[in-house]
Image (cartoon, rainbow, N blue to C red; front, side):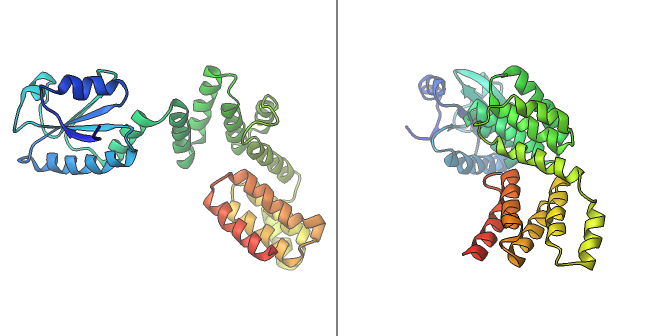
Length: 281
């Protein structure tokens, strides 16, 4: 079955309504005479093709037949209707930004778990820890047995400096839960940093004694606790490069802890992993 197809009133029930029981169908009302509608058609054809059959695009040329446009109360071109499970799920009028269309397609094709992760990622990318915290607290209430939400909530609390609350949440998460190491390590770094000299004091000490590797490791911990991960990684890497065996390989172990906090797939962690690997080998 084609992913992008023309829709006629005669085939609407079979091609759109029945198909939407398994695959959401975007219904685009357009005409060659309307330049914005032609651009919307081009835009949607490109986007839909990226979703590997998880969504279909039905094209309704109103210049050829206005029956469906009248039936679905289309007032302008382009106009978009999303048919899902036989019902109109979304309705958009006029040209739309690409990001709006991508967000719509993600909502239609992602699993519930993926949608939650995407929404959380958006809050975190914007640095909106308060919204992320509220979102996760509600998620924990809705799914109290799901360790993923508790792990992420503990991580956000640790980032906000709410160490006691983070510790309590983390205590309720099984030791073998996925990603548990990330908030656990973040919490440990924050607790360690609280007992160390300040960043200003450590920088001043290293200006006088640049070969003080213990102070450099302490600075890495303090920088990480303040969210300055590139600076933290650089300090730990310098310790490793100056003396690989120092403090029972403290430089390497500190780097590994920082990688754990940054998480899998992080670009910065990946860059410093390569630097560490190249030095060690």
